Length: 209
Ligand SMILES: Nc1nc2c(ncn2[C@@H]2O[C@H](COP(=O)(O)OP(=O)(O)OP(=O)(O)O)[C@@H](O)[C@H]2O)c(=O)[nH]1
Ligand SMILES: [Mg+2]
Image (cartoon, rainbow, N blue to C red):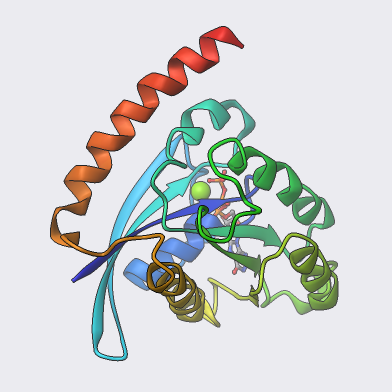
């Protein structure tokens, strides 16, 4: 079993929780509460007969939780960068989320950073679509992101594809030697241990700032 840690990044209301809920529980709730801090889900998936356990950390996009959610960036295998296709501001703000992530990782180094997939939500409301796929692709290219996927948590369109593509992108990094999958059964435990260490360092760092 291979275990990957996945996080979601993006403005509040873009639909991050709805994506995770559709993927992990196959449910959609139009009136879901905003995420206060962080939620956690686990999902199993099989690709080419390989089993994966995805540990999905759903990070709330509300500004006041920024400092809390930052601590969950550490030891991440992959991140979905979520914008709302009906909200042009949300794609511009991905710049800020990427910038935030770059405090934890060198995003210019292919090997030393999480795999990234850009996700445009609410594809079902075609009439209100403001951000075109071409515009999103341009943004992605500018930031070295290879994949943009438009989806709808409401209809379920392309939801599984997001996690399949992200997993394959993570595998590329594993194959390139950056992310080890040896002893993955123990990764959860090791992951938290390392995260605590890094959190302590981060806290010191923040107090200096
Ligand atoms: N039409 C449509 N609406 C959606 C879709 N996904 C989400 N929404 C709507 O957008 C709202 C916000 O979605 P959430 O998943 O809670 O947004 P979030 O990104 O998790 O927000 P934070 O937790 O605050 O960061 C939902 O309550 C839905 O009403 C979708 O695929 N189609
Ligand atoms: Mg949420």
